[in-house]
Length: 358
Image 1 (cartoon, helix red, strand yellow):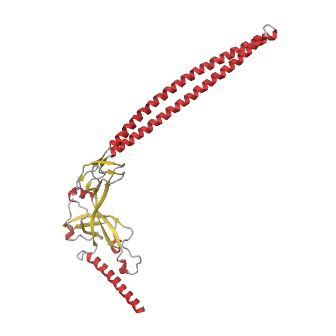
Image 2 (image 1 turned 60 degrees about the horizontal axis):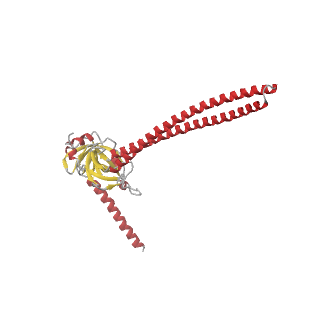
């Protein structure tokens, strides 16, 4: 049993050693033996930023104006969504706005009416106050004359009753005035509510109009239509893809370098890209990204040879000005080699000296 176990471990160890050696040989094979010190090579593939063109709201695709492979400019209309429902909502909101504005006019008229009622109530209060003062004077005179016996007591009692009646009439007039003032406050609140309703309906109109404008799906950047996801007549959800656009102003190659080289790379380091489809001309680029974390990393790192398997993802970006001049030739997915000049003092080899001109 012990011999079988030992033999199994020996076989497994041999397989692991062969795998490590094979990986090291493969990486060494990828390195161009003709490169001078200070320049490293790695294989990669041309990539670009992809943008999904989608509507903000759900709806039916009315028409698609761009074909697959077509170059489009930023702001160009690529597709249109059906706006029949949105236009119906807009008409409804506009009718609501007219109604809300009419409500403001009616409420303002009510305010004016309540203000007139208040003015009338104030005049009545002043009249009742004058009548009360006159009644009090008559009562005072009749009371004095009654004490002297010059007038009958009945007249005094009648004047006292007149004073009490005038006081009650004055209180009623004051209550009517308070009611008129309360009516003014209520009418003014109705004006404020009507104006708020106008603002709300106006906001709804602006939202619907924005949705109608957004129904024209425009290219956010210049690029090439990669593929049409939806077709005219299909209903898509809000955010659902209609067209996929490749941003040809942001084209790069992604490749991997070992730790021994990644530590010497920096943002802006010069790179020459040599594509399989263009082996005679190098494309100038610069490193725009170096990952902070190694990929394809084993869980345990024990020996120096195993540490060679640590690879860092690097991105070399092609200058937008160069891409602009050669848009028709830009293709994504093309494989090739990336040559990174780690040492700026080292001249480029002859095969990398012939670069694509801007």
